[in-house]
Image (cartoon, rainbow, N blue to C red):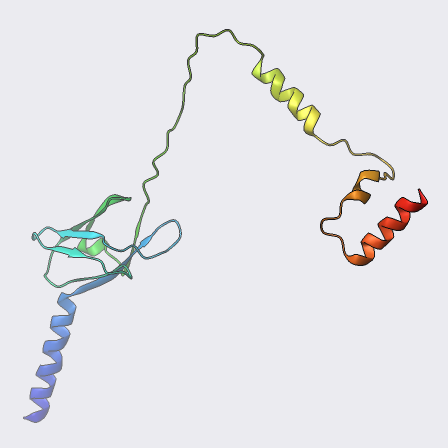
Length: 156
C-alpha cells in the first residue's frame, strides 16, 4: 500500500511540473538575459521575467506573445517554444538620408575625396628612410633609448 501511495505522489508531482513551462529570454545579438519582458498568454495570463530573464508559465496555454519596449514582439505557439527564446533588438536608425540645399556647390565631393585619399595616403619608399623629427619624440621611449637619441642629436 505504501509503494502505491508513493508512486501516486511522484506521479502527481510529475504531472504538475509538466503543466509548467519554464524558459529564459535572451538578447539575440549578445546572448545576455533580458529582464522585465512581458509574456501574454492566450488565456489572459501575464508573466514577467526576473533579472536573469527566467519565466515560468504556471497555467496551460496554446500560444504566447512576448513583448519588451526595446525588442521586436514575438508570438509563438506552445510547441514552438524552447527553453531559450531569443529576442531581436529594435535599432532606431534611418535607412537613408536625403539632403536638399539651395546654395551653389562650392566643390565637387568626388574630386575632394580623391584629393584627400591621395594627400593622406602615405607613400611607401622603396629603400631606407630616416625621420629626424622622431628623435625629438620622448613619449613611449625608455631611458636607454632617450640616452641614445640624445647622443645622436649632440653628434649631429
